[in-house]
View 1: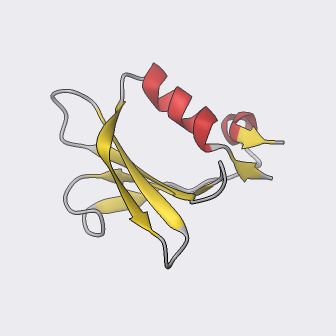
View 2 (view 1 turned 90 degrees about the vertical axis):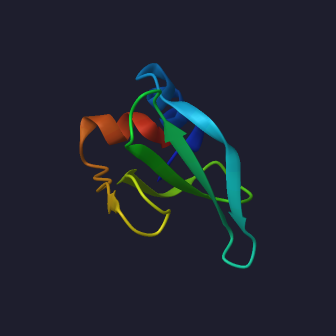
Length: 88
């Protein structure tokens, strides 16, 4: 039971976030990083997902470089919101 990237992307787009064009792919580590931003806002969402699947590894919120200035978002699958994001 993992979080679906497609469902979380749809959720962010419903809040007005747009996926940025650049995708960072880390083949040796097996994941891709996607940035989502809102016009006129400095804070962004950084979503990491496995390369060959729809499953999210981690989600972070903040600004700055991709490795500094972001705070990880805790994914608690016991909560109703995260249960909706699970891909069965």
